Length: 142
Image (tube, helix red, strand yellow):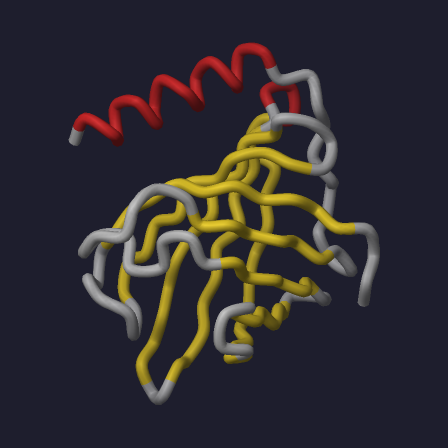
């Protein structure tokens, strides 16, 4: 619980100091996500790196450690451009198991920042989990 309070406090500081802008859409963008924190039951993907390619309403992502590729559908919404906050909602099927999660982005600059990952259900347990990580928007690699 203590690390979640620290996370909240960190995001508030970043939000208050953010002058960076988010893209109006992420179609055609490639993101590099690095999962932070230590490995535990709530963060089984700690220290993993994922590359996500966003197309119109769909995405593919690759886990760099094992080259496993998944795909799904997403929605993207800028929640507060002035404070650099946006939400990506993702839905996919993995081995006939529905996975739903959100990525709450908070910019540090125009190309990177922090995000909060919240899984509502999925193939990797626990079903509901929350952690934070870092992202970088790569130049159009698609």
